[in-house]
Picture 1 (cartoon, one colour):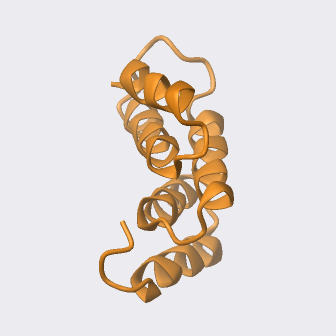
Picture 2: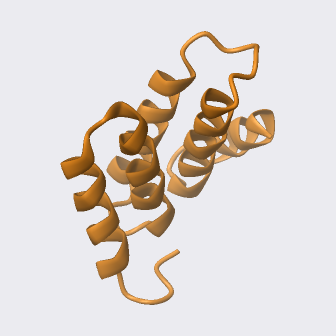
Picture 3: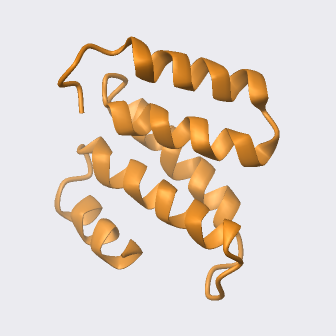
Length: 93
């Protein structure tokens, strides 16, 4: 799954959704302790941050950020990201 998202990122580096999906894929690997990537949590954090930076109105970027921040222990940051995601107008994704 990550390879496909990385292909999409290479095709259009300015499209935030594949970054967010890559972040969620890495957090899935992190939580399930899957082998193959040394710093899954760090990669997840970076991809979520890039998604939000690329497109602050992309719902998936804020969702990915909220999910990732749960695992870093940043509950205030998680709440802020979740609040931003829920404040976006319908159809933002």
